[in-house]
Image 1 (cartoon, rainbow, N blue to C red):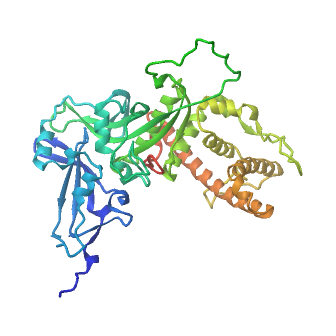
Image 2: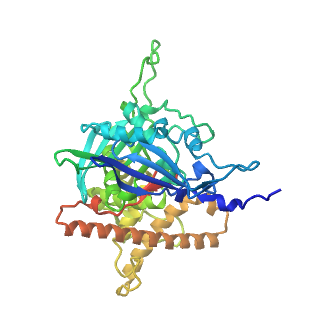
Length: 481
């Protein structure tokens, strides 16, 4: 009996095998605009991110650049012949039965190509045009709509696979994390708002016409925001009844959460992520029903983008700029600390006015206050800076700022710190403070570079267009910045 073949030879990395591309029709056929590989495929092909049973496997996932109609195509040089329980991975079946792609993705290549040529010149993204801005490589448009819109629901079904592919831990809208079923629940579709980012350029075949290219998108979910009234309402009368009929959730107070955020890899590094984030944030900042704007489980890349954008926004508020470390405070040897920030009594009002979540607001505030420290004591990423010797006043201001940060760190980690003795608490807080100082120094340098670049551009490019891109999305990570 012949021995089993070396199975390891038939394993291929699923991230390398899968190639995603954007294509657009032209007189000569379909032109490829951009290509990229996914970062993660473990949610589709398993934790090892391996596909078994092929040699020279190439999985081509083509997207029509405007409406993102997908088409899947497989090619390989050899396929493993099943032996016992060992058989090749059913790539098409995995993607189709798992609900990762809509049925149209599995149509014939000729159908995909012919329909692309027949798509009308009057196509435009779903929803309503929300904002237009000029980017370094063309005009960009942000279109806004809700998941109730059938066109948005269709587009979401086409691009949702990009979420787990580009975001570590990303999941689909309507997916039950406790279930293996591919069925999605859209019963709360009216709570989901989409912001689609498109690049609009002149057609290569006809300069009189324009062509759209999908660049990325953000999704937002609204939660009901319950805030008890300062004084209890009067008791209802005897004839009071519950209201009947449909209640418009858009009119209720809400907490708005940025859930998914993706800029496709070929378009990162051009400021698109910052512009999209600022557009979404400013829309909900001016939205009367929104009381707080939050972000769902961001990764470090998105945190950077958010911190820099939020700092730039807060610095447009006069009340925020008036906040300073109160250097008149004398640190007591024991007992509670007095307020360490001038205008500390206004902090919560400023935060509520900004509609930024507490932890995020106070982190950005600390960053802002650190930027006010004298050069002699201000943390920096540079090892070659020739800084002056600190005076006693400089050291005092530094100590006060460090206490501000330590207070927040202690509150945030109170339960964990309660498990260790006092000396260890002090050591751990000091270690964490050192990390925070370096993080803030890095972010402030990035912010300052963006401001400098903006000024050198004579105002032609705004701050948010100057920021570097990062990356993000729902449930743990985020793509581009």
